[in-house]
Image: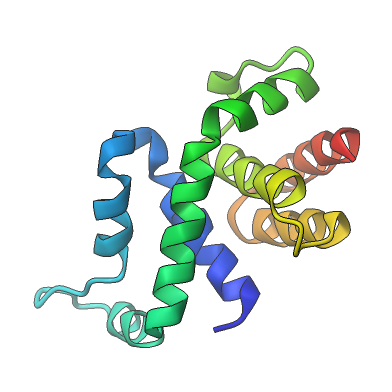
Length: 143
């Protein structure tokens, strides 16, 4: 898997964070790789097969690391999003911001510019143009 594909999977799991308790995250990560007999989408079965064990472990570790730092990350978001409370930020945008800020602040292997660019690419896939501008502006304040 490419880093971009891994990042997108992490984003999708983080998107579900507000709907699950922190204690459930490990189970949610495992379930995100599962397919079920009633899955009628051929893509979901193919997606599950494309994850090697090392990719699954990396994704799981990444999600659990981000959730362990989510309070700190949310304080950073609160500090750079003047006039915006966390509950006003869309769930997709919030997941993208959490992932990008984690990569910028806690992952020395990912250059800041790459983290920002990848956040913008996710925004193009899952959000609208206004959200892209919003996320770009917030991350620009951070670096």
